[in-house]
Length: 412
Image 1: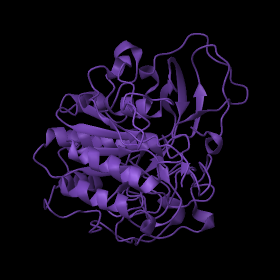
Image 2: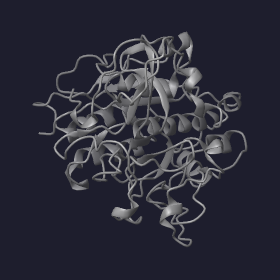
Image 3: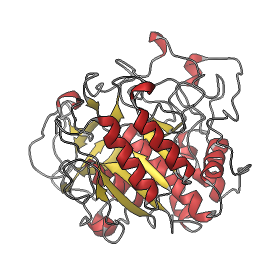
Image 4: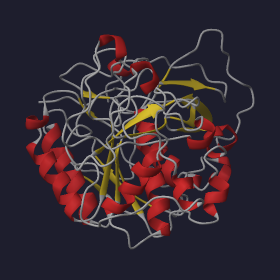
């Protein structure tokens, strides 16, 4: 039986850093919204009419910036409580990154008019195996109107054959017309093992880039990376303590940015299918200047919804062909491993945030030891559900002492 591990950011005290006496509001620290041209995009689309399922630890609907944005949802475990119960704050932060309104000095989501469908997947260690629990969560989300499914965690135990129920659920979600985004993991500098469900065919595996547009050291690399998004130096609430601000990062946050980007595009073009939305995201993603496409580091590139919403770029193409599984746009120009680590968004100032779908055909290059991305903890042994979202998070507001936790040791 797989055990469950904390899916969110641990609080890590940085050497020499003291808490700031007066807490800053989170929005003032969300630097990436400006280079993404969020204000301009919101004049075109805010995600209206699109429901994003947050398959996670639950979502606290009482958070000021999430009031009115969170649907009832469900707890997919064998001993359900409430989808609005969130013991760690991880799912709540992910939801706020997607649909937060900024109310009360809180987080400003990239798609603030979208709705959040919380699907709590905190299982009992004795009763809930990963595969059936994840499958139930995905089926519930797709069957209850979620066009975008955000999965900011997973496991590195087993291989694709170990998750038949989850794979079946992914196929169900795709048939229902949904897009499934999942974090590829934070083990890039250690085991770099493929994570699931991000590595399953049909799931868009999302890696993390920093503000320079390069793949972060911790972001897991390999075939599972379809797109990348900003996942470093992300402002968020410190767990359940909404009066304090933390700076963290990980592929969880990157996945939220990718999911929100899809919501913005879908709201503008509601008649597009899941395949068409994904296709334009792949086409308009910022690509590396050299190296294989898809790249083991950034997949098809860094998501840039502004290119679709503001510049009118992207050809939706055929409605019924999955561009990820068909590996559309795959090229092989003069490979350059070092160059492949950069998403070259014309610099991150233009792309800031990207999400990439996993290659269902499983054909991208497998990086060797010398090409692994790195930074941060692995998130657990192969017998544990791994933390795919959080890198280090630094408290910058409030006066409480720092809590120091390693992701691999942060058991729920």
